[in-house]
Amino acid sequence: MRAKGRSLTVQLAWRLIVLQVVIMLGLIVALTYSLYGGGVSYIREKVPLTVLQAVHADPAAGIALVQDRQLHQLYRSEPGLWFAVADENGHALVHGDIPAVYRPLVASLARLEPSEVHVNRAPYALTMRVYVGETPQGRMHVMVGGAASTDTGEVFMMIGRYLGWRITLPLALVTLILLPWLIRRAMSGVAEVAAQAQAINIEERGARLAARAVPRELQPMVQAFNAALERLNEGYDARDRFLAGAAHELRAPIAILGARVETLDAGPERTRLLADVARLSNLAEQLLDLQRLDENQGQFEPVDLVALAREVAADVAPLVVDAGYELALDAARGWSR
Image 1: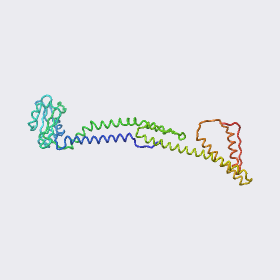
Image 2: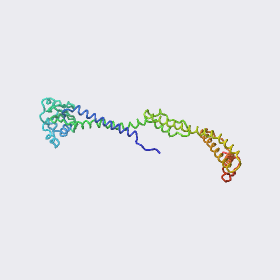
Image 3: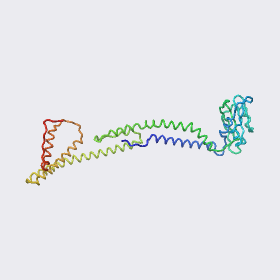
């Protein structure tokens, strides 16, 4: 059963998006204070938009203003407001006291593209903005001034809206789409190593994971796992050597002990000692059998189960009889597997 954990792909994707947002916010702050810090004035975008929305076609003058509520609110909030509006058919209208330096621009306003003039100290009478927008009457050019602002917070929001939709959002979407694919491609070796670990058989010594299949950052973990397998194999080898050595070393003393017990006078003590020696001999043989099985030679031969059963019965018969039981074997000949 696999334990559920947090997805590395999701974590990296969101962390990268957060980093991108933080970098973008830092860039917006830097742009705001580099362009408009220190009391530099500008014309808010709302001002030319309000004027542009009030423009309508007039049969006599070509274009005229609708004195709507938004325009009157703008007049009240900006008493020094002035502006000029021109379409591309040569029609123009003017409102307010346009500074003398800008009056010659009214005649060529239809040829001007979006631009701004900023002033870095009060009074901000020369702060000006040219805005170009589409209306039902066609393309309009608006030159507006007399409504200067030094609020950097609004500039921050304006730059944020502009860069957010055009840079941050597309970049985040690209990150969410491409990053999982890139991570899966970079981590493809991890799945291979996981399959190798899943296929490890504890009975087959010497199995190792391919450290080169994973990224360099994950190689220490694979190397540590391989080192653990090496220590495990060394432990198994030490156990096997101990079992083999113990079995061989015990056979001679047990045989000598059995021979000495055989020389004792017949009696209950001699019988019990012989049974104990038989148990010790069987234990040594079992240790040897266990060691032979661990060698895992992989060779299979036909076995006469009747003969094997007789041999086992003969080995345990003294113990059974000594315990007060009877042992009998009844089997057909030649039963082999």
